[in-house]
Image 1 (cartoon, rainbow, N blue to C red):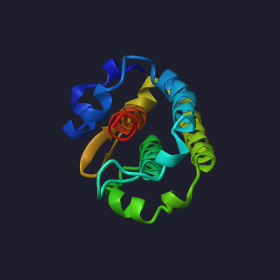
Image 2 (tube, rainbow, N blue to C red):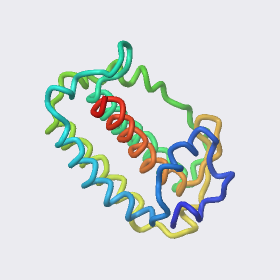
Image 3 (tube, rainbow, N blue to C red):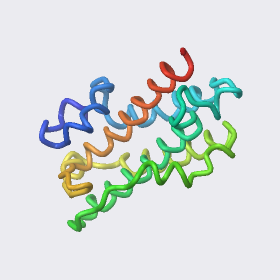
Amino acid sequence: MRKSDLPREAYDQFYGTYLSVLDDSELKVLLVNGKTEFANFIKNIPDNKLHSTYEIGKWTIAEVILHIIDAERVFQYRALRFLRNDKTPLPGFDQDLFVKHSNANTRDKDSLIAEFKAVREASITLFLNLKNEDLSRTGTASNIEWTVGTLGFVICGHLKHHQQIILHRYLQA
């Protein structure tokens, strides 16, 4: 499945921000390539920048990275529930609460890379053998009707969106 295969109504306008940063590659290609690309991106962040912010009150780079990992886990879980035809509406999650209790600023790059790779490998495994009808299954989370395919693309776009923020606001400032 490609991003262009998603019905426009398959995602809320807010999540369209994440999809807009993706090219029209196959979902599986985006997931696999993103694993290596983002791990290398983290590796190249200067050590003295990892626990810094670009503005008072903003998350540190380590917190942004752990937010990406946490959100991917949440989106995976939603996709699994919808794949198994669970129609129970799922709540949203408070990203600020997650970050506050993440202990991200006690982490080093190697531990963040290892956790990211493990979580991304779980996403790859989850989406690897899905057929188009599986990717078209729906469910409700955060009061939004989702398709499984949309969740997969949001995983990729969410990462890329935040990677661009790290690059432009934290590293090139």
